[in-house]
Amino acid sequence: MQDPAVLPKHGIATIANDKILPWLLPFLESYIATNSSLPLYVIPFDSNSLLTRRACDIYGANFVEPDSAELDALAKRLYPLFPAHRRRLRKFLSLALPLDEVIYLDADTILFRDFRPILGRIEAGKRDFIVAAQTKDYVYNSNRVRFDFLREALLFNDGFFAASNSILRLKDFLDVIEKDEAIFHAVRQRGMLFAQPLTNFVVHRLGLQVTPLYACVPGASGESFYKAEGVTFDAKGPRDAMGSEIYFAHWAGAVTLPNRRVFDAAWRKYATMATARMRNGPLPAPSGS
Image (cartoon, rainbow, N blue to C red; front, side, top):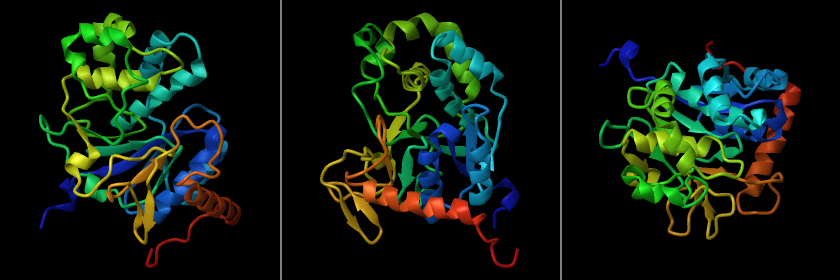
């Protein structure tokens, strides 16, 4: 039997503050329902996090504040305007957590299935970085065709990724921009986009092998968009139009809270449960503790 002290450390991470608490609470409730066996780390956007800390206490999540000085300086350098928006780069602090592998998700998400089948599949040089949703937009502009390393690159939504800090480190973001900032600004898509162009650029500049979730987890879907069509539900959760298992739903780009789309009833259920849990206090301790 392998020594538990040397077993890989896996976990889930997100970033949040009190401004997005209406999104964070259903996320936390869905985490408890599906993935409480994995540690959850909540990284603050900023100091507006009093209620976020309380929610972490109630849900047994780890409220953590990794040293963000270098990353915040990088964000200011790349995006001198819109300080509140450039803090979205703090998602990269998930790579500084005490984990061998981390699954990062934006907080405007709910989880439907156990994520443990996703973990342990990263393999250097083969599956360096796992994503769910691919995209053709919101990453680069037409200048990408000028650069060999971008021309055929797989573009992805960075609201979900699985990574290992033995392959991709926080320092890599600093080093890549130090060397290739001019290229980044030449190719990045404008229009209030901050973290996503940078995530793609660093992963592509390092030549990492990007693997879609469906290509490494049997039966998994690459679908997660809140406007998805053809979705059905069974006792274990949602499936896409091809019958593959949807692991989570992401309200990327949503400007209002969920209401009448395919995943919205599940979101509202978790929101109602979360409101009650916040009112009633912490989860009961596990038996035998």
